[in-house]
Amino acid sequence: MKASSVGSRLLLLALACLGAAVLAACGSDSSSDDASGGSGGSTTKTTEASGGGSANVDGEALWAKGGSGECGSIENFVDYVCGKPGEADASKPPVKIGWVNNQGGSIVSLGPQATDAAQMAVDWVNKYGGGIGGRKLELVPCYVKNSEEEGKACADKFLADKDIHMISYGSVGPGANTINAAIKSSGVPVIEGFAINASDTQSTQHFILFTASPFDYYAWGTLGRDIMKAKKAAMVYPQGTGFQNSAKAAETAIREVGIPIKSVGYDPDSTNLVGALVAAGAQGADMVVNVGGTPATCVAIDKGLRQLKVSEEKVVGDFSCALESEKEAYGGDIPNWIFGQAQSGDGLTDSPTGKQYLAALEAFGAEKNRPDVWYSGMFGTMLTIAQTLNKVGPDNISPDTIKAEIKKWRGPLLLGQPEPYCGKYPSAPANCGGGDRFFRYDGDNKWTPLSEWSDVPIELQKKLNAKGV
Image: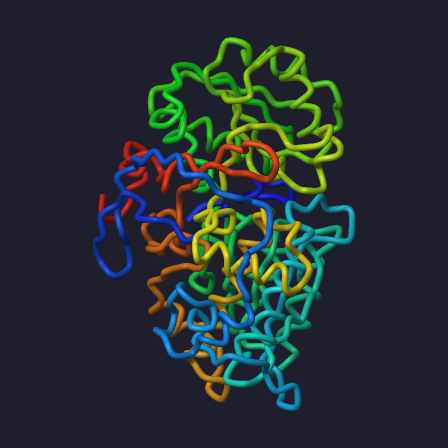
């Protein structure tokens, strides 16, 4: 975790590396400094994770213990950002980041909430992590609302500000190509969590921490074979370039592991999707895949499945259909499907990382967003950016020093996979991840992880000439 504004919703790592965190090893073997190979297998796990309740920890007291551990360690968030406990000094000039998202216009954004999520993470860095060498971190936003061409205004805005030395993307499909072209000669790097725009993966100025399309949906083949033991699959998806790309990725991986699958696209404005489910063969499938969707289509799929009496345990979706805001439309709670994200999923668990993350959400009144992969993904992304900037030092920040530092980064990725493998796939050199972690929703905000990590199927890794395989 998509070529258009309606591209796949990342899953964080953990869709993917959404991804997709911090999970146990991917079942992969380490290789060179810039890559680590994966076996494509997964380990079944049945321990329960809790998506609700309180962190039961004094977050502020916990973070106050930071600053004395290992820089970059996920054991303590202050240590992760290489900071010092306490607030940044508002009297000093801020360290600015150019921020872009698709929101506020006619473009159907995959993550309009990405901006609020990123701002919450920045607020955490400034209030609890000491900022960047004592200076506040500041997002300078620019939104691409209606067309690709609007990206030029964002690029011009950032390049005109001498204090902006890097850019980060939220959910950016339209506008990304224009921005990328405009900033190329400047050398300004883009550090993003998930690449919605396919060409981001080809750029030497981009660093995609969690995952990029289509790698976030490839692990769905591993899920079908190794966890669900499926013999036949059915898939439905909203018609539209981005969703079609995501569906194609999932279909490719599922076929690659030997599972026959029928895929059917549907009108995203339709509220009756029984016909699409029947056409895909959902009633006779062992694995029913629902790729992407809006709150309305998620609910329509659920109604159709219930009407056809398809068991919920056979259904796989992504976290766009598992939002707190959708519960009422479902009838009180989200369905008991399997959900995947391109992230470690630690944000849903009661692990030490999960408790710290919940405490961070609670500190800003955002605990209802715990299952939202944009919140966990942007939190991991922004804190990794803060780590990079603190390593560079506030008085030494430039496009070149930022790029030099992030090129040395080898993880672990907070709320993502512990061993990112930037450059593993020659076809996507800027991408640092691939794979997903899957959870079954048990109701009442309870989540059961089905695996530690599900990587891209080894058969597909080989076809893609993955390093270390």
